[in-house]
Image (cartoon, rainbow, N blue to C red):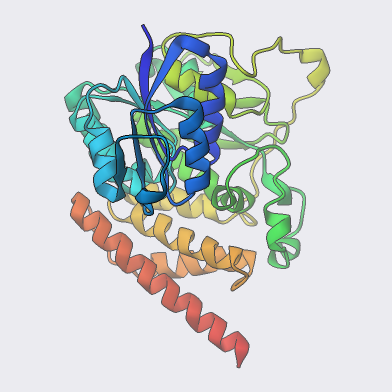
Length: 383
């Protein structure tokens, strides 16, 4: 029987790669719904190829061609994620927009393949508790968390999670190199093909900081037992250490097709788009080193926010996102992203157990304050 799937964020990097995986798998899946932002041309191409029953876009619904059931806005996402025809929903959108649809899917007891970082960074305690209450499986799509998921048999016997990081384009560059980096240099990731926001976060290692927070929630692991190690080849995607000292790692070529396929097919495995025999001799060597916490300051800030919990991770995420957007627009420098985020983070009052409504209100306020700070910096530079 075909597994029915909806993809939230179908025109983005993860969404388009997921459709490539599904196309390769042939009759294993039926596309129930596709949801996208404003890339109407792209989603019209996807409709013509995959024939979803439902489509949702953020705007210009009247320009969607080839689907009889066209939805729009947040209401469209809610409708798709409450449809119990779904066997699984791939949450592939980026940003806070993924949080409420994820909670809707959980409430309707629909399993989730999760590629949306903000869902757990902003509201991990709430999301994981709701998933537990409703018997919903949340299968991680990120290569690191997917690797950990594959390694774990019994989480109670695991003493440590080891998250690997490629180190990004500035691994062996100086702080001065980072301070003077161009947008093009920050987007030139040596291993992974990702969207611009996550690529910039990978350049500063903020992305790894967010993954630490995600791992804490996904696997209920104390922050003191989550380590980060630099691994430039991106072959070991992460590892776990058991209480007896055994270390189990998941290896593979750096391709998001593989973790996407694992997440949407779990617990089954099939030959897929990137399936081929792995050659240790061709890889030849695997290097590892400790992260430079003085150069990549986001790692310490993320640990701090995660341990504090509550609204701290909401503030961290929102401030970083707005600063990254400003960098991509050429308004600030790469190293300003950390300085702005840390400044905003240090000024916000902590809320220990915010509700979903409070989380969105805090997120909104942080973004306003961050953009005010950015505007002030830009104005000073132009005097």
